[in-house]
Length: 362
Image (cartoon, rainbow, N blue to C red; front, side):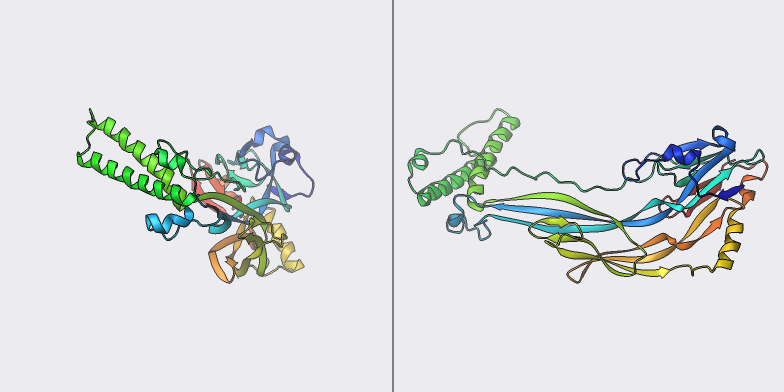
């Protein structure tokens, strides 16, 4: 029913050139439409990726920053320009890439109820008699957009004394007086003590909104602005079988996320510990295994690792992952697809090649 091949077959040619990161839709292949009723598929090699959410904080002092404590009683005003990055959170994930050494062809016979297979764009088996619509898309690095404008709001309706003032100190004093006047006006409106009548609640809301905006434009000139931008940095193709520490990516408070070979940043380490792995087979055992694999559809029983990300001796995240290349190869029992009156659907994990489900659908 099944044989391992080393040459690219017809189905594989249809999939050549696809990229695991560029395409996520799977493709269904019917046995009747393929040469000799055969379909070629591959099992995956598992790789890891790291995703870091990085915050960029730009600090912009206002023109009255030195007077924030005196006039507003504020201790944490921005006093000088600053530009820093920090790691907000990180996570680890896994994905599968096709393993050219585990390429198989399946020939469907007349008495076989397995009539079609679902493959990823790279040719990894995802299902038998099962429509697997898509596979998870790999994350990509991206630059975010600031959560607010870098420029200060324009000042409106300032008293003549502010415009005529010739020193920053005098302007700060008048600006602080204007802030308190705006607050008093808002309180008067809310309490109903305002001399100005409002025809309805909407008109009152508009008036209060205008006061809030005017106060904000003045207050930020004392407090300054902290503009936060969230970025995503992704490190791909991390080896889950390399025990010990490897540099996943680097991080700099000045530059943000950097590649593993960019020495401007400090290393973020990926620490791997294999927790479950199949012992290697000798030649005799492998020969016996290959004969068994020729009798059906081959799938993987993955091993397992513990993976940690560490930065400056602190653990950022930790997860267990099943890994295809640390496990064993097994074969689906042919009886699943030869029992009369029964239609069996199989779903596989394109990341590990392992079974997700085996179910009778008829």
